[in-house]
Length: 121
Image 1 (cartoon, rainbow, N blue to C red):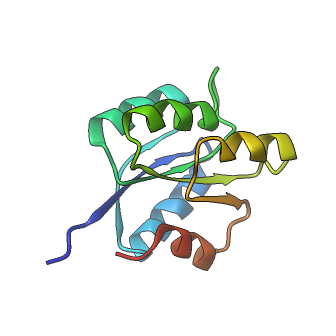
Image 2: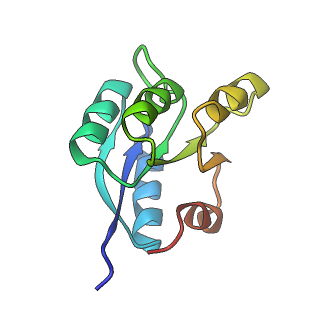
Image 3: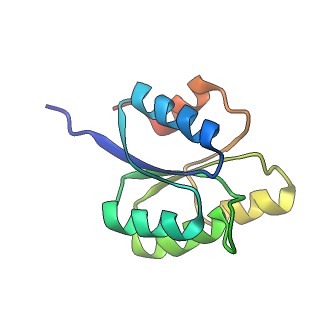
């Protein structure tokens, strides 16, 4: 029996979060939690310790997805981080790269590209 792969979604737009959940299911990943802000995202990452995280950059609140990724990377260096964002400015891309992500996907994201970035179960 294949062990389920687990993922956390950090996205503040509800419709995009639903899309990501469906994409994860199609790729054979189990969503352990969703969060709409940095604090909830960090708490869920620490509680559930998923194998992967889909993160938006711009979130409500004081911290953004890059800050979450950099903080959690210290605690969970093996976490597969995939940024799914509408932020394509060169400075933001450079910030995302500093978190050593597995992929940076710019919205709107094609379902097949997202599934490929996750990898199938």
